[in-house]
Each structure stands twice: as C-alpha cells, then as structure tokens.
Length: 71
Image (cartoon, rainbow, N blue to C red):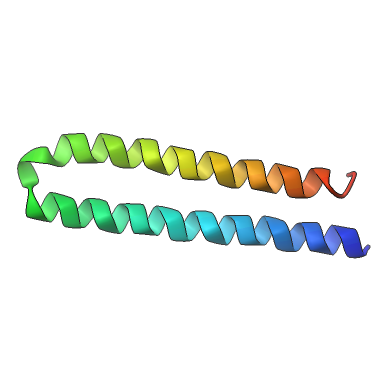
C-alpha cells in the first residue's frame, strides 16, 4: 500500500516537472520569436523537438515509478 502511494507521488512529480519544462520552453520560444520574427520556423522546430524530449523523459519517469511497485 505504501509503495503504491510513493509511486503515485513519483508519477505526479514527473508530470509536474514536465509541465514546468514545457512551459519554460514555450515561454522562451515566444520571447525568441518576438525578438527575431524571421527565425520563427527554426525556433518552432527546435521548440517541438525539445518538448518531445521533455515528454519522453517524463513518460520514462512515470514508467520507472510504476515498475518500482511491481504492478
């Protein structure tokens, strides 16, 4: 019972971390496009790749936290 709740906390922390990371990526991308509009397509491509990496790491953390429970 305790291990399951610890895994749930770990999964929640992974989701919160991913949300913060993607928020920072999006904010920085918007600021960059505002400063240099002609580079918008390059910035958008890099932003999407970085967001995909953040999501992959968060998904990996959730899977690891659930594997630790033996479920």
